[in-house]
Amino acid sequence: MKPGHLKESAGLPVKEKWLLIAAMIMIAIYLAPMFILGENAHIRIVDNMDSNIAWYQVLKNSGELFGSVHSQIPQIINGQLSRNAFGSQFSLIVLLHAILPPMLAYSICQLISRFFAFLGMYLLLRDHFVKNRDSSPIRVLVALAFALTPFWPSGMLSTLGMPLALWAFLNIRAHHASWKEWLTICLLPFYSSFELGFFFFLTLMAMFWMRDWIVKKKFNLIFIFSIALMTAIYFFVEYRLVASLLLPGPLTNRDDFVESTSSLWHVLILSIENFIVGHDQVMTVHQYVILPFICIVLWQIIKPGTGERLLNKRFLQLLFLNVLLSVWFAFWFYKGWAPLKAKISILRTFNFSRYHYLHPLFIYLMFAMGALICWQKGKRWKRFVEIVLVLQIIVLFLYNPEIEFHDQPSFKQFYASQQFSAIAKYIGKPKSSYRVASIGLHPAIAQFNGFYTLDTYNNFYPLTYKQAFRKIISKELDKNPSIRAYFDNWGGRCYLFTAELGENYDFRKNSHVKIHHLQLNIGQFKKMGGNYIFSAVPIVNARQDGLHFLKSFNSKESAWKIYLYGTS
Image 1 (cartoon, rainbow, N blue to C red):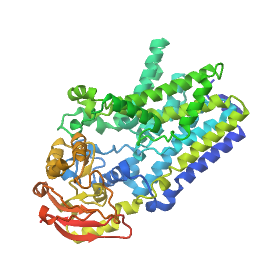
Image 2 (image 1 turned 60 degrees about the vertical axis):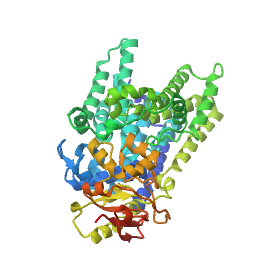
Image 3 (image 1 turned 180 degrees about the vertical axis):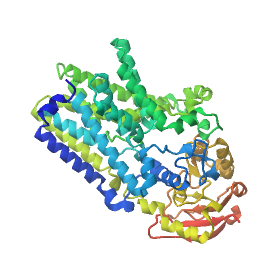
Image 4 (image 1 turned 90 degrees about the horizontal axis):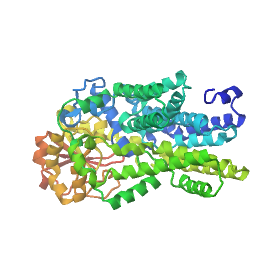
């Protein structure tokens, strides 16, 4: 009998049906501010509005959505940015941003991601981990909690789709798959990232298959075929990434990455921190409710003769995997790796620490297993588990973007389109005829508004450009070791860094900060085509540094006051 067929034949319990309806309503309430407020909504800035959303807009306006693997994006860094640095045209999130207004596309992507995150975790628990009919609150509420995690928005289903993929693979492995499982593994690559999630998941599945072969002596041909099939589809969807890795070309800023600088002591601290708090791009918010609950479950397991052996084993295995992922994440930055990374380029250009992107899947499976262990201990424990599940959902609601980012600029305030239209009108020339750079605010704002920028935030651009751009800011880097290491060892943010502002790019109109001792190489700036600087703060010594103040721009709908400086 196929997994879940007993439930289907008998029908869902009434309580579970109502819980499922309630879960859908909760997801709708969670997402409502984005759809109701539109561009007045507050959403994440870091690795979101400062980058991906602007990239989608630039790509949309470039005419290079279907460009070849050799085409360039003219609007950024003098046309030296490869089309391959942006997402594939086969990605649903890229297509949605190409045909819809950016905030609407963003909101719809959130809806799709959270719905399938819920569905995947629910099916996985129902068919493989929490199958008891009376434990429906665990299935539904853990799935709801997983769906409400504050994941990295442009990751789409890169992590949130893992439960759905695992459900499909476990059914295929057990030879219980229907067309639904095969459709799942064929469609997920169109709404997730291989590099930012599923590479790590699929290598784990391959190890799972190998374990079956070595330990159980089962060469499961259909299982390994399904893994290979999904991998092949990812290679098709993300052929630009494959081409970038395989085709010969100039060195990029990735070849200049220096990650492994930590001592063993710092690795230990980072391991503990990652296990307790997690990582910004795969936030699980497990530290407040789930982690204390896990300690209670451990105490119950340690007590002699407590719980089912299989449940205890699964819980402990998941706990071990979570600890292992945190240790691996931290160890990737250990300085002992440096000699090996210096010799093998892929260890610099590909971030293998991201196996910790499996954390959301394993943490919430562990949460479900722990809840089931306590659930089976009697009526009082059931009430305790229900309280814990509800508390976790309440905590996650407090991480709703409209609450978490309420003190940050809204979408409209961040991109400030009216204000930047006024700047363009004042300059009075076609935007393609001059180049700009920003100080004290993200270049993504200028890019979103159609300006051609010398600065950028991208993880994949020519190393020669990074070296040329560095000459503009070399004196500022020399004055501040922190930003020097930040730029030289990484350089993803190719910004006009200043020693006085440091790594801060969020100086809003109510700021009283001024730059007094700016030392840019304006000659190099002009050599690279630079004409104007958009600064979020006044530059007191602008004239001495070869700049002249033109005009300040303010707007009610903007978070910024922009000071426009010219070079001639």
